Length: 218
Image 1 (tube, rainbow, N blue to C red):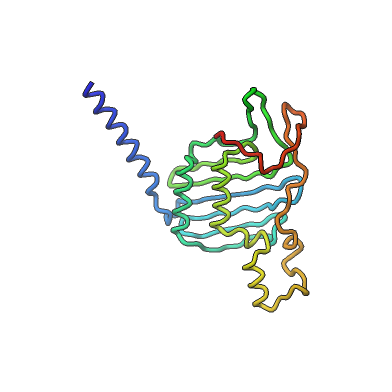
Image 2: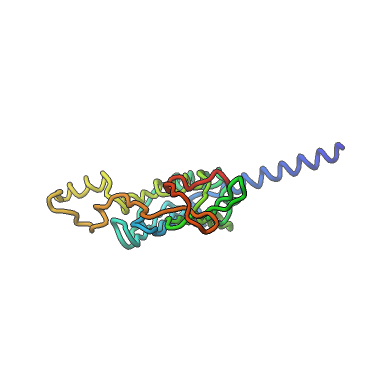
């Protein structure tokens, strides 16, 4: 019995040391890469991708329905990347499903959706890489992480017209009367997802707002 207890304690200690080793990967390490890409929907949802490297380099590429099309580069503090890495571990990202596309109800029925935008999140930490596609039935903790990536990378500056952008334009001599010099997408603000509905066994079900497409299940 005593030998068994010692062996069990050794296993727990080894697991803790392993977890600590994973979380101690320095964010400044160039092997740390965080990526987020968002696809279009039936309407005019912003289509873009952003990459954050461990040294704080941010690379953005706007594709459709965004204020800034093409590639942009920015820089954030390495400490912010380190915080993001902790968030990945906090939600047990490496153990999430690879894709969320359907929801199984308590009665056993399987529900899906169409015309929604999707988000794909991936992270590389050292030799480990994990990618998760978010379409429907996604756990809230993953959605929150996606929003956190957008916030830390400050993708809003390229996707929408925010207050900081307006102030910058005004400082350079732009006025509202001159119109939008950054392209028509800027005036759209947050695009709505357009037509959307759920499906149960392939049949259209009563529509619900996309904000309720998430599930507490992993």
